[in-house]
Image 1 (spheres, rainbow, N blue to C red):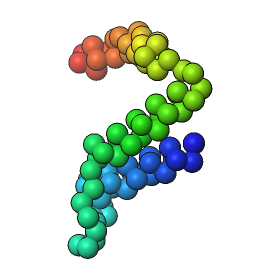
Image 2: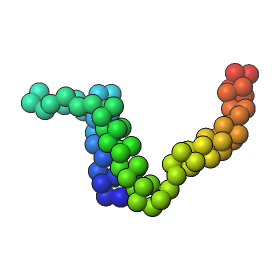
Image 3: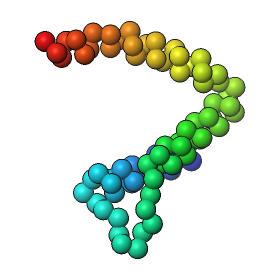
Image 4: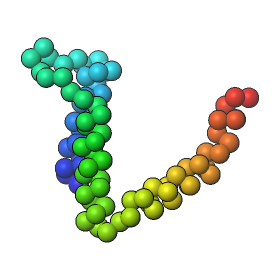
Length: 79
């Protein structure tokens, strides 16, 4: 979990550099939001594998919950 927190922190730092008020110093190498997201995904997959969790099934279950919960969200905003 510490590794996951570290990777999320690196993503937050990169997002802040690219879109927030704190740009990188001139001597800092450019970062990559896609690579930081990939690092997070890798750690999540490792955690799931270590716990014998089927991420495909868990993701499908989560998406079903989100889509049913938010089914009318966009039509309500359009009114």
